[in-house]
Image (cartoon, rainbow, N blue to C red; front, side, top):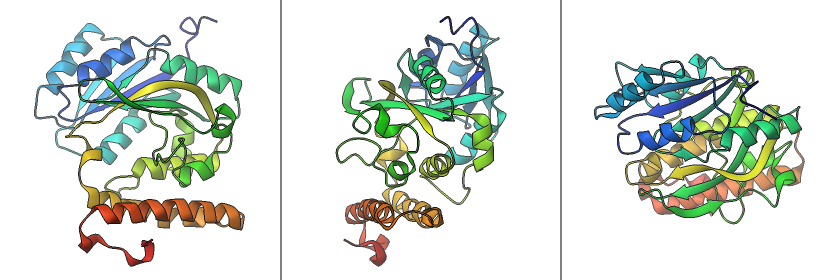
Length: 286
């Protein structure tokens, strides 16, 4: 099957903010996809380094493919994310932060997974965690095979138990039907972080998922990304996402409710132990 001859209408959105060290790798990883998107929308959140100049140099070389936008002030990650998703022209959307990368077959294999699961509205893959130099640190593998993370995956997403082992992360950079995103609503402006978990909870509650079984997303850990700082904001946002989505459990079995509550409240308690006592939340102490 020649997917590029009749390629699906996919927009890839790249989010950047002071990403000069890594943004070239992010852009190149999209340009080398075996299934090329119809559009690459790059949303720069008012970078103060050379990120915007790098973006413009790529846009000049690929004017029919790359659409650059630079905000006149810093909007923050959630607002920049909404801007990119809402303004992407494709029927299908996938996005990536300016410090991450994709393997070359990421879009191709996720699109094929969706074709094999026509009821699904989004598709995801395993994740390779890389360091600042781009070398692999660890691999996040989902479930115990494709079937455990396809279809209805709401419980795994809400419980933050998508990947094997003690990993509390969830899939990243998934390929999703834009109409499905529109129907579930955009990012919660009250959240300083974990808006992506909130979005995935709402998405998986309403729609089934597809999964490739392959490791196609490269997530970079370094000292300046959000995962390495602001731990108190992580805790407060996690509690907010958890409590606001509890009504979605109304029709679940007692065992399913216990599974989610146990896993999420354990995650909250673990974060409490890592930060200062003033962020102690007695309701979630284990």
